[in-house]
Length: 356
Ligand SMILES: Nc1ncnc2c1ncn2[C@@H]1O[C@H](COP(=O)(O)O)[C@@H](OP(=O)(O)O)[C@H]1O
Ligand SMILES: [Mg+2]
Image 1 (cartoon, rainbow, N blue to C red):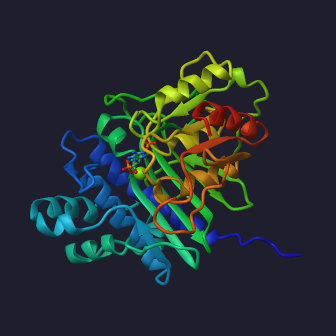
Image 2: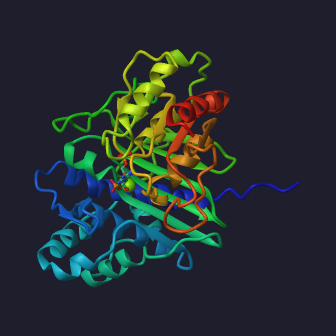
């Protein structure tokens, strides 16, 4: 009998690395000035994005020096802007887990500002179908992060093009798996009762546990999607940004399925985590621009966490997301994530409405 690899060490490092990075992102979240700059594609990036990426890559390089990394950010802008670079360095050098053993597992502090820049740029792998490739979104939902809403620190390990390990740190979601799904938390919210670390290993199921600032919380719980037969009772979630997912199409789909409650709008892969634990049921991402290619770091961890929770994740054509062809999901359009028993029914209505 062939048993599936358990990826125990990978999972532990990934969880701790995400947990450490969220200490940094939370510090930035609670500050007014988040050091926002516009990237070439005009999307925003903050000091938190760069800092979190450096910390996660440092942990991966320490533990798995041979592995390739696909990460969202690059250091070019920081090399030209000494102020920005120094602000990030001040954050990074002071961020550590308050559990010594856990911090040791991650390899401890980054040595210098120059090694921080080098680490950030190690995330430049082209991706692909062979070998071990990590994918990082240091702050997914940057717009939500800036708005005071949901965001996620995301890390996935792909081996030969398939996601095998996925971790999502969601500092602003309730710890309580059974809490009702609500939209943005509002920028005045405190950390009280919030912060969850989702994880999954292929064929081993998915879990949630409270985010801590030290070692991993022992309160790990198995999570699963809500069994939902009557689709009129389903809770849908979608992006806050109408430019990322077509709100008008979503409304028509909901209506056709007889859903009267409006969709819950929420930024980032917190949507995948929320449906995986049954706080919501269905996540649709409906293409706005036909030419847009989804990025692998925006979906890898969430895709595995939902599938390991009893869900199915496909694109709008019904194809599984294909992480094996590079930094983008060039073979896919949009996302339809739902509990396995109802996925086909939802997909059919999506295709009817989108006329495909
Ligand atoms: N036109 C577009 N269509 C779909 N997704 C887009 C998009 N433009 C940007 N995005 C992606 O949407 C992600 C946020 O997803 P969501 O809308 O679910 O919160 C962004 O991640 P970042 O915030 O990491 O840049 C970005 O990669
Ligand atoms: Mg993202």
